[in-house]
Length: 267
Image 1 (cartoon, one colour):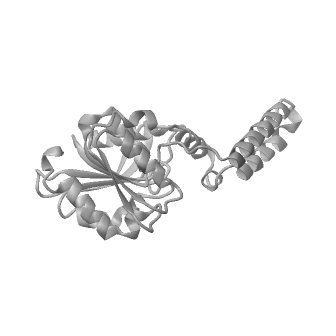
Image 2: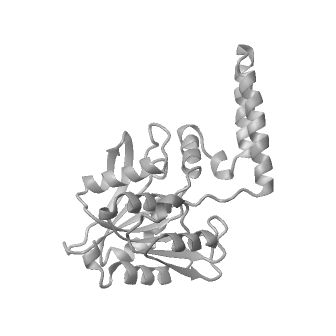
Image 3: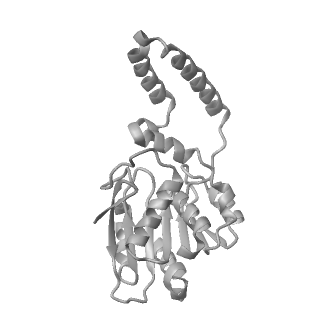
């Protein structure tokens, strides 16, 4: 199914439980992925709950945002979809970038979120290493030079090519794969530090992390656990950023217990 939300086509699937009293679980995927990454979990959860899976704008079968979005706009689009579907309250399972959206939703709309599981969640800014700081300084210096050259009309086209090369050289692999509105969206998303929102989260939150996660290192999960008032942390030893997939059966059992068993009144 597709809904037009904030000027963007948003693809989603909803598996409604025949039990009208069953809670609803919302699945939020990571950057560069799609809702299909949850397929194994969705198949099991849909037997005992209603499940909503969506492709974030700029991913999968959804269209691109009409203008560069930040985390707030993504959270607003999720909330709008829930309103369209007449879903008052959800439990959330969020991975990586989806964790950013979950943090915003849980902190700003506590009445809409029952419980949340964040696995390998993003949202805390990584401190730059010395090497990264030097690269960032060089990038800014070169960018300033090129902006000055653009003032010369005869240089404009050539400078545009140089700027593209500069961004590809100094940007991350994720950034280099993008273009247009999604490049600007990516920059807005990763530049936002959501740490100040953590203490406002009222929903019981379970953090599931891979010990060997290099994308969102374990210290981020530990910091979230300290900052979110009602949070717990489960560590999967020997697992990485996709720990929830590497041990999906174990993850499902944990999710079932935390979100659904004996907690129907939360959603």
